[in-house]
Image (cartoon, rainbow, N blue to C red; front, side):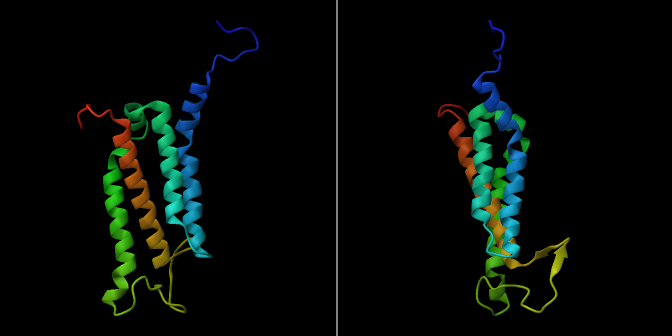
Length: 155
């Protein structure tokens, strides 16, 4: 029974509420970290870890099955990891096909740059996006396997 002035919400229910709402803002922070590469070196790895930590909180607060029900995109984690790996490798080693050193900056200074709004698309940005997808995918796969008891069958 709850006495006057006390809340019937337990710390568990507060963590669940925060866990359900955290992935959106974590994606925004991750996008900002990746986009900062426009002026400085981007940070796809840190962005991926931030999103994976938000996903980990969802797993801890809700449990494995409820987390996967709340975030249906989690089942695509292997595809994210593979897509990120391919994107990072392609952006890093594509210059070799052009006879340039690996991880060369494309387009070169002074050349036309494709833009989405004010965001310029160039190889370091693509590399950071690839690293981000790879980190989120791999860490989500690890969380999925850690959330399943050893004897439980796979889907």
